[in-house]
Image (cartoon, rainbow, N blue to C red):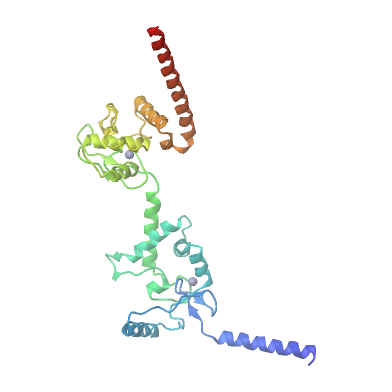
Length: 319
Ligand SMILES: [Zn+2]
Ligand SMILES: [Zn+2]
């Protein structure tokens, strides 16, 4: 056989294969609902069924999914890549809402709103993927209704808003004094009040320490929590906060309007915090740690020197 005939044969084989491929059914992507060509993306394994009835139910359900030969088990190349790179949720948000500004775990939380029961809607909403939605149109993300898009946009806006610092309805933090903070504000126990007797709140940072220590209400325990919130150093069991240590709401500077900076209302307080960090440099903010380690060495050397000169004095006195 000559060369030209071989090439011709090869060409025929290839085009016949292309034709067969084109004739093969396509499947819809279980994630975005767009068409995935045969061989494209990934196919999840056969679902496992508890019994024959479940299997029959599933077969019946599949028979009612028109145009999808792969039974919701095909993921298109784009969606498969997003899943493999662990950015599935943020990819969905970008495609559906146009939001670039979310980390993956935040995007999952936003999408989570569609999995919750919708009080005004028809009950269980389901989810944002074509599979969870039970509908695929062949155009990516076209199955997401305008109402669901609205819900996602709203949840996204709420999340973005929670990222900026804001005041609480009870004023600044009764513990650290800051006027505005990121995250949720907690109601403080009634044992800590503003000088006019009104309620105070804890910012998320102080509330986290308070909660970790069992949410105490006695003022002595609250002050211990305060020391830890201010310095990071957990006051050992059985010890109390220093006698002059006060929380913002019980301090002379107490003001429900709060302060720009936490733990900043007195020089004595600043000094105390620095003393703690000198004794325990590991709890100092990272960028200041080395400075406090240095200070600790200097103070330790001075103490040792003082002790030995005192010893010499004492020995001299006995001569
Ligand atoms: Zn897809
Ligand atoms: Zn606080």
